[in-house]
Length: 115
Image (cartoon, rainbow, N blue to C red):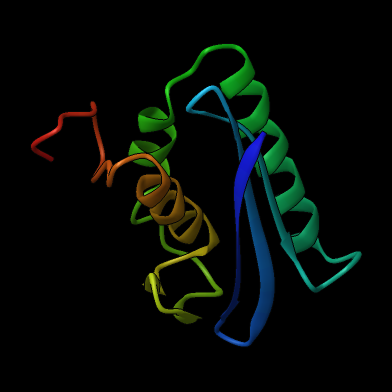
């Protein structure tokens, strides 16, 4: 299994995103923020689990990107990640990273190579 790890600080909230792949396909997503025991940490763990289960069930990465891209909630802003310099939420950051890992899938709605 191969993977990518990205560390970020989104509006003062440090975190780490690990995306592992098997056979040219994402197989596991792990998004963690350094606010252990917080609601935000619990929700990021739940989001990671939901995406991983969906991927294992055959859901395409493009669907997660389409639904999570441009979601807006705090924390938001600069990320400290040169590849994804700004995000409108943790979900938007995750979607942007997934898109980069999978050929820059863009936007909301059905995946199209021209989006």
